[in-house]
Image 1: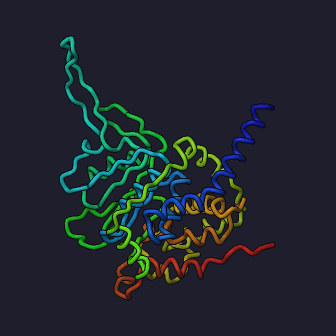
Image 2 (image 1 turned 45 degrees about the vertical axis):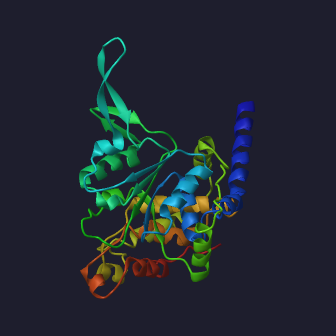
Image 3 (image 1 turned 180 degrees about the vertical axis):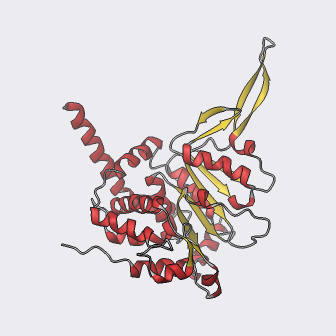
Length: 338
C-alpha cells in the first residue's frame, strides 16, 4: 500500500511538473528562437509523447538550432547526421573494426555510429538512398540497430527529428510510405513575419549569445511518457479520431466524395493513435486533465499531411494535402456533447 501511495504521489508530481513546464520551456527557447510558436509546440508534443518528427522547411529557418536547443533544454545528447547520396548504413549505425589489445590479441570491436544519442537530427533525410533510409527505419521503429548480426539497443529516450527541403528535389530519394508513417508529425516551418525576422537578424548579428539552460533530464522525459498515456480521453473523442483517419481512405462506402476524387492513398491506424496521444500531451500542457475534440482538430494537420497522398486529379485541379485535411475536418461529424 505504501509503495502504491508513493507511486501515485510521484505521478502527481510529474503531472504538475509537466503542466507547469510550458511557460518555462517557451521562455527558455525564446532566448534563441523567435516566433514559430506552432512549430515549437508540435516538437514538444512529439517529444513528450515519445514520437519522431519530420520537419519540412526551406534552408535557413533555424531547424538545426531549434532541435539542438530542445536537446539542451532536456539535457539530452544531440547528434546531427548530414544525409548525402553516398552515405552508407554503417555511417549511421556504426561498424566493427579489428582491434589489437596490449597483449597482442586481435578481436573485432564495435564502434558506435552517430545514431547512438537521445536526439538525432537527420538532416535532409531524402537525399540518401533507400538502403541507408532502411537502417534509420529499424532504429526508429525498434530503438535498436543490427550490425554483423548483432543487435545493439539505443539510448533512451530516443527521438529522430528529420528535415527535408521542399525545393531542389532533383537527386533526392522520396521516403517510402512505410517510413513516413513512422513519423508522428510532419511539421511545416515557414518564413517569419517581418517583425520577427527583424528580431532574428538583430539577435544573430549582435555580440550577445544567449545560452540554453537544462530544465529537465532523461529520467524526467521517460516519466512524462508514462504519465501522458494515463491521461483520460472519452471514447467518443477516440472514435472521432478514428473516423477522421478512416475518412481519408478512398474506396470505402462511408468515404466522402471529394476523398474518392482527390486522394490516392489515405491514413492508416497509426494516424489515429498518434493524434490521440498528441491530444493527451496538448491537454496536459494546457493545464487540462483530459483531451478534447479541439485537441484532435489542432493536431490533425501535422499528423495527416504526410499520410495522405493526393492523386493526379487533385494535382491537376491544384488541390493540396492541406485542402483535403481542411475538408475532412468539415466533413467528419464531431461527437455531440451530452
